[in-house]
Length: 472
Image: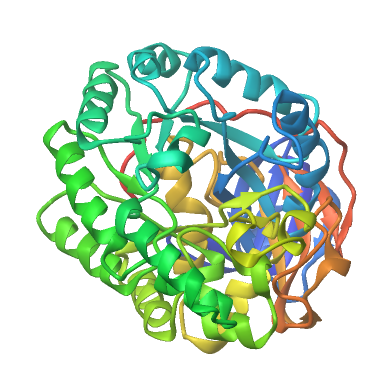
């Protein structure tokens, strides 16, 4: 048999361990993995010269449609332009939230898919943001359409909740209980995600720290969200989800205490999957202040402190935290650069081009994390949770040929100059890393080489669920 493409002489990171050798592709799928001499001939061969091949990354935490403007047109434009940076960083699949509002959930779900079709440069899933009890009752209908994940902004109350289309009470435990009942009643393997962060004490501390006149803005911002702010909601909402048989997915874990809480719940048998994001693993609030990041580093929950970063990395190594995303938005720097720090929008724009380079350097070069663990937290575990493993998230026979080739010896300076989407600033401008994504393949087609896009707009498509999601 003659293959379409063979990548040979590489270090192939499979779920069971690295393999020195090659992999073969026919059409969109991987058909063989093994020693070079066992793979056979191909119409095209690429000699990797010892470079590392990882499964294409899956970023499960992206917010399209929240741009300089809001709505379907904004979301469609985000897919059209900002998914380019996914390919630059080796990200072949994302999950974006629906638009945030009070419209019927099936409509929001369908509209998000329509925005991505024929525009996205990478494959994608859609997470439904649930704001009202009417939308809660519509969860089973969306599940029948293939909706797997449901996002609840439990950390918002008052004016912030109302701005998102919720009541001033936000997502109360009673609201979440009803949502978990609807998820369980759907009869399908779907799951809730929560933004865990107490909104009440945070409001008091924001007012106090704003009046203090401090200029170490990001350190002060970190102090507005106490160590326990995530943990109280992770425990409360985790207990509700556990009672009703729902696997809970708390997103963007930032605090050391939260990792301990998740570990304790896991020890009790709770089905809980902890996600953190690349920023929390790569920097601290004092470091960002020292670098002059200012409002560009203002996210919610905040970038925290060295002890938090260290505990997050231990959580990755021990498996307490099993997924890494970015929590990316798409609005421009003008929402960060004008006005008072305390009034500017929270969130960071598309930094997905840097996730792999940052974390390869941190994890492999500095912290002794093994390649299989890196592949799991950046791809496999999210694919399992979303029910699309092993089609996505693995280098295995029968899997989609979604791949990223890393030159582990190459040095690179990160920054805006690498981006091919619309993001107009980088949190990592001037930062040096070693270990660079140099080729990306999406379903067997090479879509990036040495930082330049090779693929076709619209080649990305929505990914259908292939198997039951399970805790990663």
